[in-house]
Length: 197
Length: 225
Image (cartoon, rainbow over all chains, first blue to last red; front, side, top):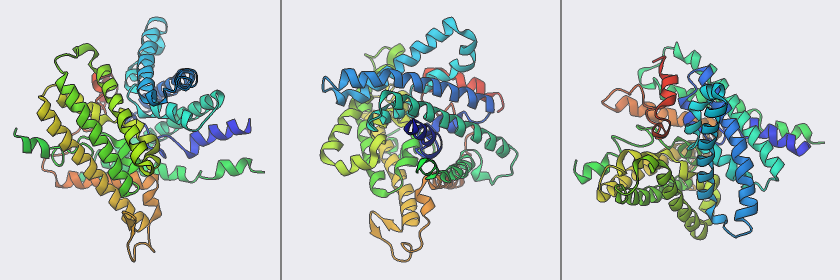
């Protein structure tokens, strides 16, 4: 149980996917302008990360490893994720139109999001059990959510700021991201020590 | 446009990282030292070259509606090949790049060039375009990694630099430094480039998945522009 909590908290705070591992930078910079789109995108990412792990983990363990096909991991995972996202979108459109309206537009974008492929591959590389892998995916998704929401707050302050001309747009956004990520450096070592007896 | 222009546009005028702002994730992640930056650049260039050649050769065969999945499968195939080669011949590089090696699959530069260039141009033009874009990617990565390694660690390609090695700013090699140096480089490019920074230079318009989502997020995002 302690291990699961450590995995969860360190995925959210220490190894934050966006601010520490640099995965999913495109949506982080592109969709974080407004709080509601940032929230929608992050919820869609959490959702897709969880189902992608739930599907790719058994495929790796029960299909690829017994048949010595580990080298197909990259191709299989990206195809499974792409197909899965399409499937989820179609199902959601048919049965949950309200949810589709708020999350649906972000779903196709996630197919080529490196955070989702990254979390599925990392779960295998780290040698997690299925439960640990699911917890790690949840933590990674929550970390993404936290970073997106925090950063959309920072960006709304940037809107009114007087910025040198050549820094307008992306450069100042990156500098702001740098400072946001600096705040996460402070968490290093905290989680492990919390449970160290 | 002649071949030379086609090649050089990738390095300066349409630099994939600093002007088109594609492939930000590997740029930030692997630019902590020059060696892994060069490794990442070369690996991505090889994949880009192979995928551009094959996609432009098959551009009349692939049906328009399923082109994105086709591109992704082709790219994933080449990435797996590169992954196996690196594992076999450069295990140190494999350890340094780690997760970012398989993630070349979702590098926007590769899908972006397939979508923007290879599917509309001849094989030779696409190969030249891939080499130019790859060179631009590698050079930018190397430049950024040099800044981060020299000032953050006091070394360059593992060679220790006197004076700086005693007074290095370690934060530059950590995550915040990556964002900061990247922002600084783009600001410098904006300062010296003739055309004004475009309004939609990142977000939806620059994102190759815009073809997949048909600009759905632009509708949500664009209302405040």
